[in-house]
Amino acid sequence: MTGAPILQLRDIHKRFGTVQALTGAGLIARAGEVHALLGENGAGKSTLMHVASGMVAPDTGEILIDGAPRRLRSPRDARAAGIGMVHQHFTSIPALTVAENIALFAGWAVRPRELAVRVTALAERLNLPLDPVARAGTLPVALLQRLEIVKALAADARVLLLDEPTGVLAPAEADELLARARAFAQSGGAVVLITHKLDEALRGADRVTVLRRGRVVLEQAVVGLGSRELTQAMLGDATLVDEPAPAAHASDDAPRRVHVAGLEVARESGLGMAVRQVSLGIRAGEIVAVAGIEGSGQRELLRAIAGVLPVFRGTREVTQPLAFVPEDRTTEGLIPELSVTENVVLGLGRPASWVKRGRLDWKAARQRTAEMLSEFEVRSAGPEAPAASLSGGNQQKLIIARALERAPAVIVAENPTRGLDVQATRAVHDRLRDAAGRGVAVLLYSSDLDEVMMLGQRIAVMARGTLSEAPAHASRAEIGALMLAGRAG
Image: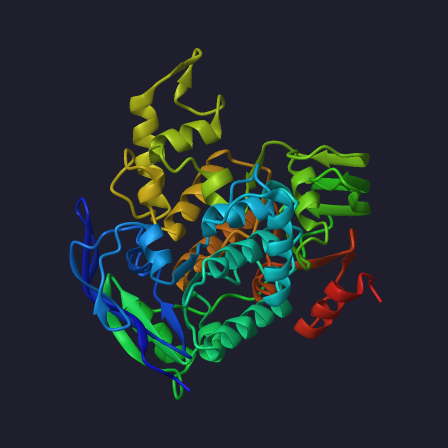
């Protein structure tokens, strides 16, 4: 049963330079309730939650905790008030252990032996097991996300702000996380679920708030709502055409752009093999989408094919140039503190048109970057704006634009639409399909099985380090069974 409000945000206004991020926005998080927060990328969702978590000070407006006005000057103030935020982009320090990261966040004393016991007990109580002595930098994405949740709960959070928490999880893991969010709410806490997945909001939340251009355009109970109403609220007058079905297989006469045989790749941690005797071929104009539960070896496979990780054994033949789109845009795809132009220049390197006789023509680089921003509909304050000022969707469109600027023969993409809204996801899908239509071989992995089925002309399933191809027109259930079985069956 829904209880009294724990956190209230009232009439919040926030401007960044010339951009009005929030205009009178608000939200109420009640005890016993899961509240979904929806909106396009750039609608103001993250800014509103950053206000709630003490990361951003509002220009005007009011924050109430248990009905009393509060000023949250920092994330520490927010944690002290019982507000814990689980960020879409992880905040753990890679060089520290799991236990040390939790202690640093929660303010615990660092006594290694006692700390390991305390962290193990907490993780078991929360049913979120973690190895306390593992270094955060060695954890796969799903466990890093789990660590973020444990950190928040270690600080005795009463309100959990979850920013796109299921973006890197397999369907079963996503369902499990939503169940844990529900259990936390039923224990007397409040959950705010920031998500771009409409079905997730409809099945996981009690109430929903929709932001559009910094304003609240819908706030009501989920009962009786459908995806059409939510989409209309998010997009306003914009229309969204249904995604096309995957194209037919590439012609057998098309040249092979990727060929790997008997490929073996070690885990990034160095402990054991992640990829075992994998063979795969991709022809020009073909999109091969890989499905797999986190940690099944798909990350190492894609990175070995992209040349990011070394091959332990086997054959790897990849036509150049190759463009790689990493799954974490803020730590591997971009340097947030640098300008958009600087990120484009660094990402493209020497072959770029603005490098002449070993010298860099910054004027030409800025001009071409401005053209790319226009061509790919990247909303920004211009080529000199810091990359950090772009919304997540616009950052991803920038990374895709930069990748295609290489005129690649092959694109390898990890979770290319992680955390993106409906419109931004469609834009990325269109660009990948257009690239394939021009003869580019596309290899992608997505933790979203629906995306795999939407994009893949062929679908391959990674399980326990081995790769099997799903039958043509395989159902979602059949592909899910392959993800769990580890054999073609």
